[in-house]
Length: 221
Image (tube, rainbow, N blue to C red; front, side, top):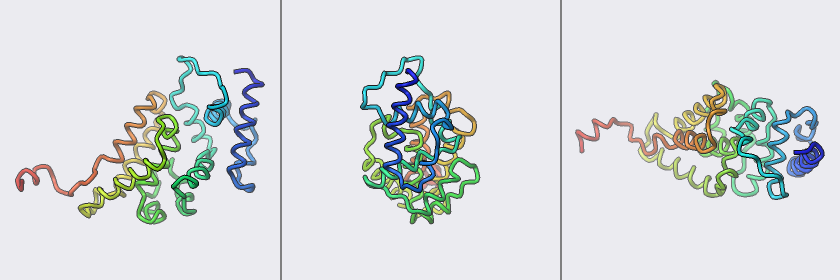
């Protein structure tokens, strides 16, 4: 992409960002020159998809490198997503936003998230990660469908009042998978579908768990 074209797309992207954000949001203070080139490319491609951009060549297909750099650089693009997502179904309470600032750390407090979200830690964790990894747009997942799915999962995890294999455990495991993907760098080597499968599998892995073993079910029929 020519430099002039990239700058034009970046300008349009940042303009859209600023319209979506409050005037005092720190995102408005970010200078384009301070943003890594890969992040600028990703922002441009994300917010100008319908503006006639040149299709990537197969050898240029990103394996989440752009998104990794955005996350690791601490540029909280999710602020922008939250502004738009709240318009179509999922509003982030202030306590949840504050809690997610530590989501890239092993020490993330899933119990604090569950309390801040009113007992919906799994739904918010799923939505947060699907947003961060750009899975909603890449796989054309309707936001209301993802929210409904998350709520259905939470209902299943609560069915047997399992004190351990519950929705908080599911949110914790899903967060752990995110940390493994991010902190080990393995996400560089995975396809978008593989990353989707890992997060999806983590979220559902103990759905409707009774808290008893397979052998217990066999013996009690």
